[in-house]
Image (cartoon, rainbow, N blue to C red; front, side):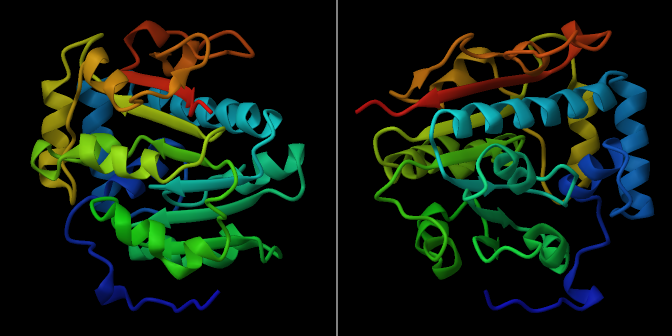
Length: 265
């Protein structure tokens, strides 16, 4: 894959970036002082924020294990964020060494960590792209190099669709991506919600970031799956989707819906 480094002035450090705030809440180091400040503001107004992002990350792990266990051997991860071990390719290849992964994110700093994400494998690509232009993502040569849309694909939209505003037409965007997937493919999606606690103050933190947070109800999140069949237990709070251990204390307050659905034949 052709890769290039980015100069610091190409990376917007004037505002918190959701990927870097997420990295901070996960305990990562690939963030700036204003990202850390935004993370602390989130914790102040939504005390479950840190366990929430960790529960979301654990959902991602379990979902990847599920789809790979179901036979999928290629993954398109849109809104991949900064590298956080174990990364999607590490999780997937532990179960099936030949899994191919295309990572997509709109933050140039993610591209600077391409070597970390790729490792020694040529079956991985990192693409700088915008979810708001799904057709361009699907046609990107570095996506097409790795992903064969004639075979089942697992599409990951984990903690990213909530950064699409109503004016972006998120339903149309997700439908465009779903429609590109062949039968037997999976959609893995998680999304922030205010259904379990009032989170207007948390939402306001993102008003100063590079992308605003759009909380949606259960019905609105469920609609993103279209005619895909949700696997058990359906749409659930992230820590309660097929848990493989005791949910963390305070899980009832976690404002992330999560689900996995399969495209019927």
